[in-house]
Length: 343
Image 1 (cartoon, rainbow, N blue to C red):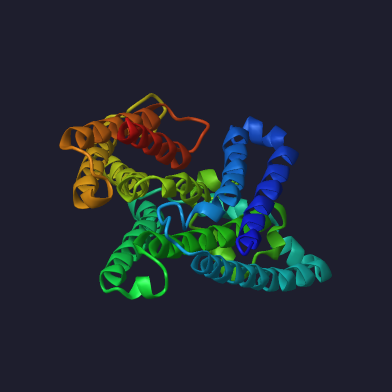
Image 2: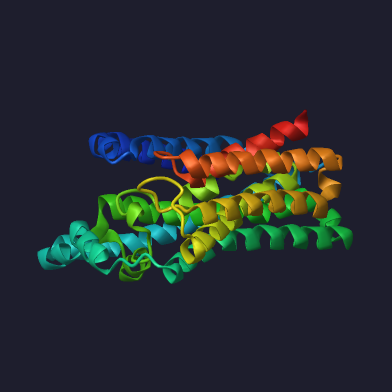
């Protein structure tokens, strides 16, 4: 039962996010955010339900003692993180409640007005935001490689672990720990902005304008990767790289070289659209070849998986409206590849 604290944290986030979304449903519906935020809430529920199976799904020989240790360590870490976040937020709550002037200065509508005045939508700003998303790729590939090395050296077997259980333990702990921090900040920002410390308010100045009245993109981005921990690693890795890398390439090419609008009243360009499609195909193909021992399918199926992922990525890029592409891209491309793999 050592997994229970972590599962309860994410089920708690599901409840809080759902309450916030339903409570503000009129505004959310008017701004086409309601469906997206409902989906984010249910992704939190999915994370809480699936967490007990994340480390052992591909490690059937993992002992109960080893699994319990992984759950215990992660749960202790997350409980400590939650405690630290509460300690950070509470003093700001007390100070603001005692001083009306400070409360006025920390008004969220005032922050939004200043944000909109200073908002710059250029390539440099976009690169900064995309870098954070690409960091998720680095974490995943670094921990996976570390797991392979330690497994080959025989270190993991001494602890009763293998490559999958050890690597996914590190990936999941860092990923879910990141979500815990970001969602606490977002719920405070959207409901009680005066609780947010100064350093966090400066961090929120780097948001996209479309994120001002909803959750930042990093939360659904990472949550949407969770189902694919149960797919072979090359599919999981491809999903992560498509959602971060292909999307970043499409954005950069579109902003720097885009001359032809993809649709009327759209910032997306034909050049960026094509670059995203090509990047998606190459990502799936190259990752499937590089990590072939964890996929074991023929070249024809790899090509077919690459084509399906590309087609789905382009459909999302062209037609997605009220649901974030940070949710649709991983879910559709991931399940598309997974289905072809299973056929």
